[in-house]
Length: 340
Length: 238
Image (cartoon, rainbow over all chains, first blue to last red; front, side):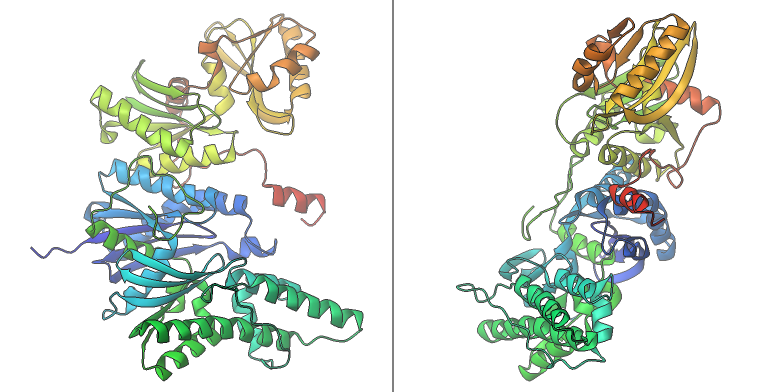
């Protein structure tokens, strides 16, 4: 029997309400994202209460649009996959509760999905040839992980950040130099006008844990630099700061990734998470991989940002592995990768 | 007509099935476990116990708030999800109205209390004149002292005592004893808390009078803006 499996994915872990329909884990039939970025820009970052309220408003319209854009009805869906962590608890609860109600009323199996597992799975959506095992660097506003993808849904964590996530550092530095929120794309754009070698910001490493990251020192170094220049009465060049800061982050990320590729002799390496759409990081990783003769994978920007197609994809493999969530599925804000 | 009632606005978690004039099943807990883990298993339990299915439900009555923001969102999102596959109507029921309605026929001014933090309550003022349910003041968020004063003023006007009820009562009982100046009583245990049977029962009345939303349009009533918005307003930025 060779029947197609359709998964409805639902994602609401931060500031995007999203739903998608994916066929057989690989083919995106629809991918609807309602972004709240303009709402949060006023506050310089995501306000959890505002985000949660917006999710309640958008969750059904987004699901409905995902079904109709895919040209399917709820009856055609084989299972509902929903992000249940990690993320903002109030935001996660909206997607989880709506998904549970919908799956229950429509008699569909429910599969709780790890958000980061979703980011990694985003790579499967556009690369039919990509299969585990491979190495992966996951970088977003909340996460910075070096992982080995052993199999679908099976991970070994090689390194993680000890303090700020890389994306968090982008947001904080962007705020400090007056670029505003969201910091990632704004720094990326500004950095193109600047000199990445203008200011020697530190490249931190964690003693005794080579593959771990630390970005809070780098963030402080940027703030100290700004302070120092201000006290001296010097004009600062925001583009140079953005470029130099970004270079420091990219050097650390791609440096560790390179070391891991060499150590584990990977033949495939992937980038995932919101910061994977940073142009400098993509360039650096592409170069590292081509130099090492390793296949390089990276999702298109639309699948790097939080989306539900990646959740449906990860949910597909969990579903095929027999994973089912109960009616008591709860949001788990600090869910660890590889946990259930 | 089969109405599913859902109550998750505050500490109480409750689900009920109203078949015409009878609450055929109700499941209520006043226990610290997240509503996210309890409400849907309760809905499932009462449906199975009565041999009913979601597709037989005519409408979902939801306690719309005010109350705990998170509790409201769990109830609202769950109700929307449940309503979506068969496009069931959602009946929004003001939470304090349902609490008061649950004490049907009492010869008192009914003052439901839910803890709104910072010495404030979510409340309202109600009474029964025979079978008529009178809403003197709909859902409100204000300091407990102000609400006690408002309840007492109404009690004096109507010549009735005040009955305090709601799952916030234990939090404010001492304060009420301290400042009360007209006769009052605290509702007994079985009348005190929210229960979904009252949400469904009042919901049925509202539904027949034309009150309904859909899974696209229903929104919880928070009464308060988020902290971040309040602070922005204080700074005069909006």
